[in-house]
Image (cartoon, rainbow, N blue to C red; front, side, top):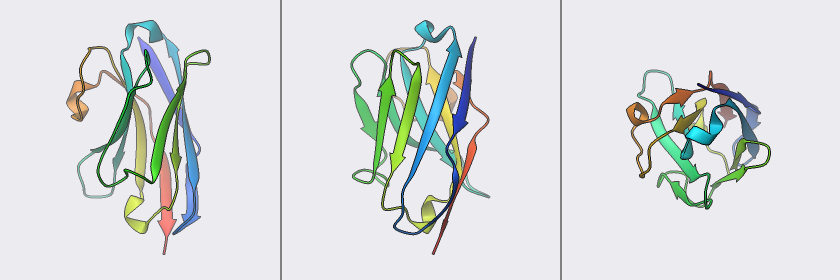
Length: 124
């Protein structure tokens, strides 16, 4: 099992920045990649970004490309999401997720472990 705990959410004005962190514990060696997803009220959970533990390879949703940066610290088993130039449409609960299998995917169902989420609110 892998446990994931997110932190760093909050309220920020449009144009501002926030940094989310995800601490992983347990059998983290069994995971291949980490992802960030978000879910706004009344909407489906959507992919934000993903990073591989091994080489730091990243992939972003078009909606956040150029504004968000995902990074990892293998020694500390943490993954971060730096969010800049935030927009009101970025408002959502942000979830950290871990995937065991190799291969790029943006589908929530193909991630194996999930954190509880952290709320991000961007005011206009």
